[in-house]
Image (cartoon, rainbow, N blue to C red; front, side, top):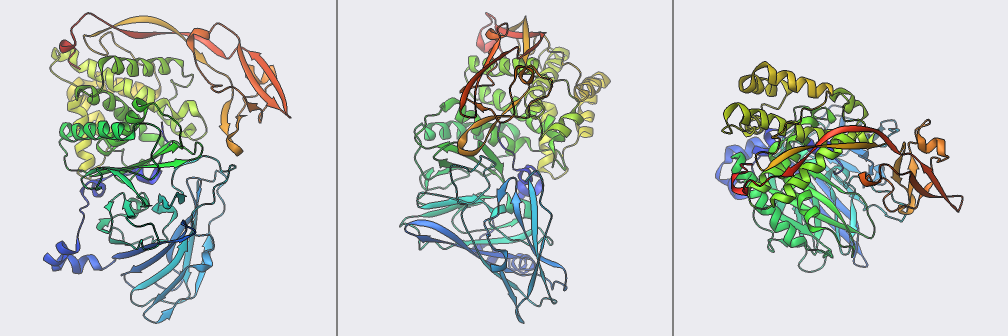
Length: 583
């Protein structure tokens, strides 16, 4: 699972229908050019270097818009966005002028967010504006030290002679009059010869009609870029600066093939998608989705399982089609957005001939095991949403229960149709509704279920949303697998492992009456085990040993970290030939 870039989650009609508009096209349609200029935004980005390292990105903006009244905010920029700091270190260095000259600005700041998730800053003019607004400031890459904690990959950083980040921490933007025609121009004369700039909307200079959340959720990378394809052309491109110690190109090529299959299957071809890989000296976060794009972290000189890497990338590319429920600014819609995505990433890559059957079975059985082992699998969807940002076990419920629910619906449809109907026929209208700008809602899904499975299908959905146990049917994975009973034990250590300063993992969120607490474990104990939260079921009947360091002294605590036994299922390969699996 990856960090979520929440504003990127709202992939509605414009994120799929927005069209790249070149200057040549605008000249062919002067009416479009005139209408687009009202409210247009021209951006000029120039990285500045010192000793071959980017030390700042000069930002120049021209806002073509109606006058703004005195006392109305002109620009807004996060102080903190999803735990990442703004690149603008001194807000007083931002200047704005219009047809009458420089504007005197006051600065408004929201109170700090205790969760450090979101805090905004606004600039307000002391008089009415007149004509175009000219904005100028310099954003600075984040200073990264060994004490910098991992987090969502939206901060502005340097890597070698290059720089990257998300627009949300780089740009000060108006809050109203969106969508706008955004024209982006890069000046790279201080970067090494042959340097290029890429964003979520393409390579080099681009013009596009965008919503504000789409622009903020766009990633950028400038410098001596590598790319696949090498020239950076096409609708599916991967960009990186530092060559990894594993086969990125092989994983990228596999993911590109998966993306092409997704496009054909969902009947929405030609959608652009771009992947950015950033490399750091140590682990600095997993990855995050953006506007028609994805960024993920790599550790310098560290090997990586190429199968895990390509499935991570395929999961994110699949989101470009599955979409998100309407207004999905919280976890409330992840029963669909993550559930269908995990299910179809596995199913469609298998159908495309990219994932072997044994890998498909392993991934699905892993979901089954995690569903039974997670002590919060039976939370209601409402409660999952409430606990999403405070409990890891709640956070992963949609990724475990969601895909299994879609597999159950598929089994129901196969059963009543003699194998002729699939859950595909229900999910495809959901995808189409997202592309058409009509949104995705539980009511839409209920209507599709009612037509296909009657009230029984609706009741089963409502039961899943309440957290009732899923009925994992005997033919959940089709004819090639049979269901066998299996006993699971839920892993309940009573704490979380939190990565803190210098990459040290420490005990956090210790539950007061948990076995760990009763054994003497304390919040802040340094975890010495490489995998202190490993859930090896073969060890479920043995005491759990936790190795920690406290005040410089190594300690070992022994306790029962396992919950009660849970009766469940696993799925075993039958002798049915693979060509008859009909997955």
